[in-house]
Amino acid sequence: MPIKINVHQIRENKSGQVAGRFTLRPEELELTSPKGVWHPLTFDFTCTNAGDLYVLEGRLESSTSQQCSRCLAPVEVPLAASVLAQFSPYQHQESEDCCFFRGDELDITEVLRENAILALPVKPLCSPDCKGLCPQCGTDLNQGQCQCKPKAVDPRLAALAKLISK
Image (tube, rainbow, N blue to C red; front, side, top):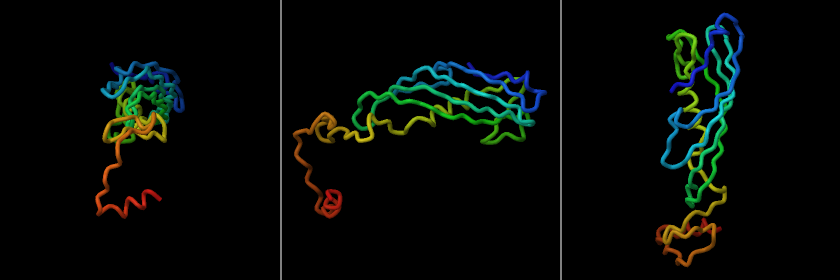
């Protein structure tokens, strides 16, 4: 189901504004992910008639439950994205920065979806100093050391190992 903003009341009023708030389910933006669970999103916005363009400005907020990319512990990842998009009724102005629309409604679904996805970290972490899992036995190194013996270093890389230990 598309998310739309009706601009009929500001079409004739240059510099006119429409403001509002949407509360969205993740499914409305097709934000389904096998890696995490999305929580409801809120979008506070202002849409301004700028002559030949409509400028959408707003703040998209939510959170998602994911796994830490190092230790696989559950982590709550906040999402906060500033949204800025331009819409034009003239198809020749359509570009990466400007979306085309017809009639009195701006379909903002794809703009919100892109901003939500881009605001997430590529590798979520439970903490910046997460030690991860032991590559040999799988023990969570945040909970304590494992009993694994250090792996023998390839003699060709021994000089690099000395640099790392400094």
